[in-house]
Image 1 (cartoon, rainbow, N blue to C red):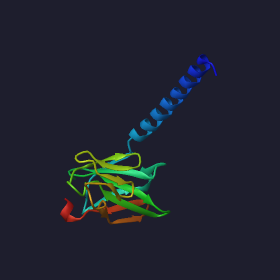
Image 2 (image 1 turned 135 degrees about the vertical axis):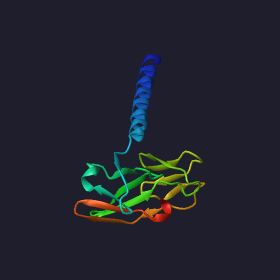
Image 3 (image 1 turned 135 degrees about the horizontal axis):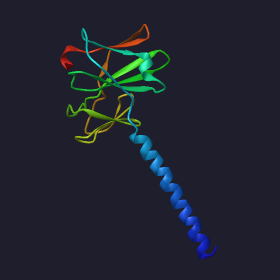
Image 4 (image 1 turned 90 degrees about the horizontal axis):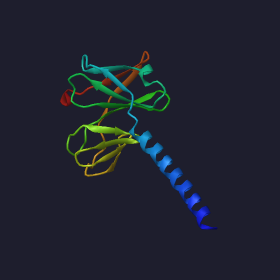
Length: 144
């Protein structure tokens, strides 16, 4: 292989890696769909249609200090995770594959399991009910 061929192939490889890496980075920055609502009678109500074609939805309730991740859990189940770091009570940031704490770097999976500390406990799960094409998330008094 001569120098010119080597450089051409090397440049093509670098370009492919750079473009592929950028695509992965951009995908991981894509925000979760968000549903804005409020708490009524100790519950948040989310229409199932708010998911669109995704498996996760970020729920923000007026005057509630933390976001909630609503995750499809099997064919008919829903998982509601309080996006509060179990180490420092900080709001978690959604990522492509889970959630992270910007305060101390803890990481959690999309289902709320801790993968990197300093947090030692999984995310708090909130009770949910699915009926009449809506998800009802029960908000415990202690979290308000």
